[in-house]
Picture (cartoon, rainbow, N blue to C red):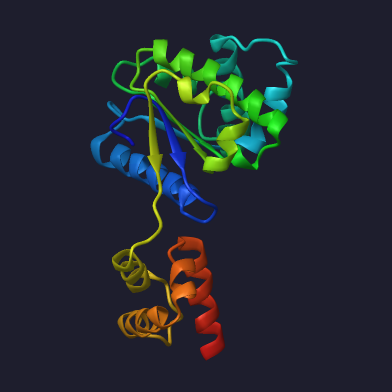
Amino acid sequence: LLDHDGVALLLGEPGSGKSALFAHLVRTMCNQCLQDGDESARLPLYIPLHSLSSVMANTKNKPVRPVDAAASLSNWFAENMLEPLDLFDSQDLFTRMANSENNGVVVLFDGLDELSSNDIGKAEDFIGALTEYLRAAAGRNLTVIASRQQALAFTGHLRQFDRLITVELQPFSNEAIYSFLLQFQYRSQFVPTIEARRIFTQLPLHPTLLETCSNPLALSLYVDRDARVRE
């Protein structure tokens, strides 16, 4: 995803790891900035779409201009993410990074499928205007929109965004399940390798449970419940 400039649609069922992937991307970009310096860093913005409801409501069914979308997001980012930390004068940080040839922004919109059908249309118009602004800006800019497949039925032109790629999160394979079990944060009295082997051996005995646990969230809940039952 981070190698792409433009727009990406991240699809996955509830619990498939969309928000976890966004958190990983933010950490990755922050670590890259710490290692390589800020000369080529890109600014990550993680934005739950429901938190932009007031911003999108201000459009009042009028067409959203790209410059207005960028200004609204810049203000929202400064007021909600940067000013509470009192880090630095950051009013124009978003637009400066977006227009820097050496930098850029990566905007991660989470939860399109959690909006009402009416708000999905507003979000689509807002994101479309923002991506138009970012496409014309000089930076290496990327917009990623996370959603369930089913929510796309309520969108109009989202699939027609210029330079759009689609990434779909697949269910865990058996190998991925075992790798997840090895890395799970078990309670201190348990040995991870032993717990991973025990649980992984049990799952195939219950095909429905194995299929359910191909979802990362379901697998986490099952492993946590298993540990509590054994205590």
